[in-house]
Length: 82
Image (tube, rainbow, N blue to C red; front, side, top):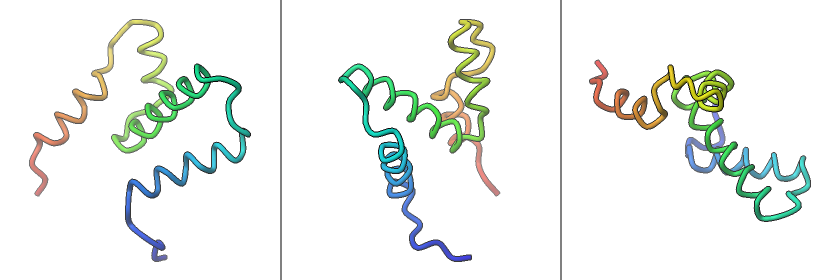
């Protein structure tokens, strides 16, 4: 299997467009903002290998047992890959 391209930004945009086509847009600006934030969190969790459901539940419940996505990114970039 060979992908048509390997551009991560293009792949993320495709997922957004597919979602928009399925859901037929949002009703107002607040809905668009909420969808964009939620979609960004989901996609970031996928790229970092974090369970998005567990992460959102951790943040909504204010337990904060999981590190923030920013901290996970910093940790992953600080760790050398051999």
